[in-house]
Length: 80
Image (tube, rainbow, N blue to C red; front, side, top):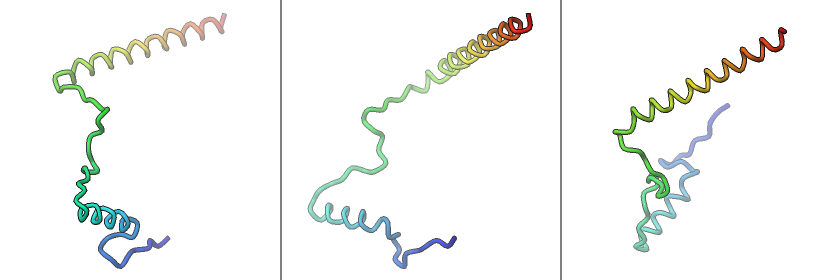
C-alpha cells in the first residue's frame, strides 16, 4: 500500500501544530517543551536499583513456589 507524502518539508499532519506554535511565539507566549517529565511521576534513586531487583526476584520466586506446591497438591488430590 503506497504511503502519501506531502510535498512540503513538514508532513501535512503536523502543519497545524507548527502554525499554532508559530502564532504563540509571535504573541509572546512561551510553551513548555513537549517531551517533559510529567509532574506527578517520581523516580527512585539509582542506589535502590539492586535492592528492588532482589525484592522483585524473591516475590516472583515465592509465587512460583506457591503455584508449584498448589499444582502438586491439586494433581495428587485428583489421582487419589
